Image (cartoon, rainbow, N blue to C red; front, side, top):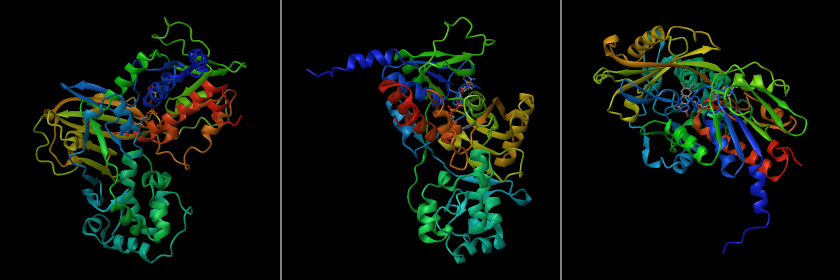
Length: 483
Ligand SMILES: Cc1cc2nc3c(=O)[nH]c(=O)nc-3n(C[C@H](O)[C@H](O)[C@H](O)COP(=O)(O)OP(=O)(O)OC[C@H]3O[C@@H](n4cnc5c(N)ncnc54)[C@H](O)[C@@H]3O)c2cc1C
């Protein structure tokens, strides 16, 4: 017989009586909610939209199921792989069949493959043919100065863009490093922490003294690849949702949270937008012992500003994304891609992924094209106009003659795009939230850095902190403050 420690029944009852409210049902919120529900905490997820998943969404368009937001994950943290395994989806994991990357919008409208030996666009050999084709001979000479300059010591420059410009010059910055940075995060490489996009690069660089040498060393090691799911990444959301329901969590959609108020006795009052329809006939929401804010950046700041000193100014962009399903033969002759980055300002679109070519999908030709916009600029444009623009951009970026006759179906989404996340971005946000009475936990791409691998790993860690605090007393451990 297994010995049950005396305090276990008491602990289980305490867990059940402890109410955790998760604001936002994107992947971060669902993962955090599930971690709390797993140990028996009473969990309520409040989601503003009428569906869960946030940026992870799939739909059937043109007779095929396609992901409209996130389509894959990086194996970098291992967190998504472990989650997928736990959710019983491991057999459906697929790897890329073609991971080629191109850069378009080069001077004169040219396009070229991303240099083979490069990391985040930084070349290991400025004189390589595939590098010179993009930056020219004068650019290669300037990049070569990296080999002649005195070494920079660790910690002196964390900005990817400034480091590259200093060591290798403006052409490497503009034509090689900016395109993947803008495609991935919608921002200039000057605002990207080198450690976030190229883990280990600064240490290797400091040790060896040259940036190109550090890239050569790191590129020699195998890096974690990208993975996706046969049937779509959105299955992760479906499984998480089902598991949360099994664990007894309450999932409310159409419930937009408008404010959080500390009641003064260690609880939180969570106000749900009264004007919102689906929440109207729901039971009143009990006050919460712990709150996890898992929304996009602008909403999180709106909720946290009255409680903390953080500003309401959001650094996130809107990514206007169009998914095109094209006739099966429309892209037969395409030689570019499947990923095409764009030199900033070189074209209207910021980037493209030829999804079906990337994963070897044979049931349809699927292309995602995206446009980055500050705040909501352009969000009110007509879907038909943006879809027509996306088709024209796909044609130009893939160098394939596409017209309306090739279009089977299309779907547009305007989604919040978080920055890559680093010490350059969000100093102290979490500390401020935790310092509120009872402490608020914050998860999501805008604090962890964009990308499912980071978002999931971070939400797991933060949820562990919350549930420890909820189980072992007050909000103190949940808030990360020492008791
Ligand atoms: C077009 C696009 C493509 C991407 N592709 C990839 C990819 O292929 N691979 C990858 O790893 N990453 C990708 N990303 C990034 C990745 O999708 C995100 O980092 C991740 O999904 C963010 O999850 P989240 O839970 O933090 O935020 P979100 O998904 O934004 O979820 C936040 C949730 O909060 C809800 N909410 C907002 N306000 C309220 C409120 N007041 N009350 C209640 N709920 C509220 C929202 O409706 C939403 O459901 C992509 C991002 C975009 C925009």
